[in-house]
Amino acid sequence: MENSNQTVPFRFFLLGLSTVSHLQVLGFLLLLLVYINALLGNGLLLITVRISPTLHTPMYFFLCNLSIIDIFVSTTVVPVILKNTLSTDKSISVTGCAFQMFFSLVGGVSECLLLTVMAYDRFVAICRPLHYSSIMNMRFCVILALIPWTFAVVNSSIHVSITFIGLSFCKTHIINHFFCEIPPILRLSCKDPWLNKIMMYVASVIIIFWSLTLNVISYVYIISSILKIRSSQGRQAAFSTCSSHFTVLTFYYATLMFMYLQPPSSHSLEIDRTLSLLYTAGMPMLNPIIYSIRNKDVKNCIRKIIKSK
Image (cartoon, rainbow, N blue to C red):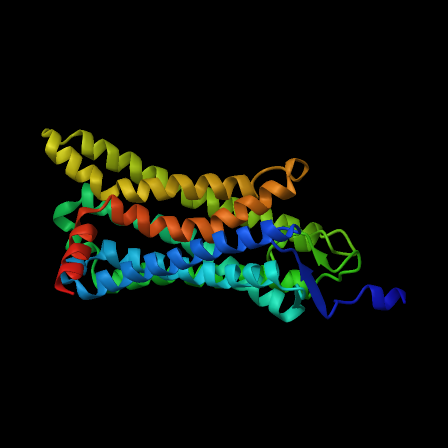
């Protein structure tokens, strides 16, 4: 019995949004609405950029990559939450849990790094406008877009491997979370997951610290260049090209740092679950809205598409 208790279980059990029936229905409908809006918003953005020649620029190339990541992240997590909210069977296989953790980590890390790439794109556009087309050529843009995905896949492979191969689970098979994320999985381990915790914090610090540092450096140069523009109209036009990205960065890093860089003793399960929902469902819905509302080029192209139809 001792050996059997320390083996990996065949299935884990996830939580739904609520145990109260009417709140389950309300939560299901709200989350479904958010998920549909995320798919429609990002899908519309992808279609708009694809069929509008004026948007075939590096900025919108990276924006399309961000929309793909948002669809990827929300589709990895949200359908499982919706299913577990109304279904009596809230189980997930160990393999399914590992894949969900892997893909959600890939999406999260690649989005974090892609936002840094987008900040560099805005830096070149505003601080080196005469050399923008030569620096941000298509080959270089593709390389910059592949770097976040490559790093994210390597990072996720390490975390998933040391979690599901290096650990055994015997405390309980119930994951106190909506989906398979690293911190709630580690709480089920039979032994102290010290290596996993160290790797998680090291990866979080490296990814968040360096990407945030590069973003700050880029925007210091961007803001200083904008302030040197003499005309107020020119300053406003320059700032409008990066205001959407800056807004997304603020929301994104505030959520990310609160989730992964706070001390373990101050972790609240309720806050963690709320932030996870905001990150996996809310941000994918908000990103295309922010970029569309604050971007005249996108709004004009959408109007033209609607009128032509």
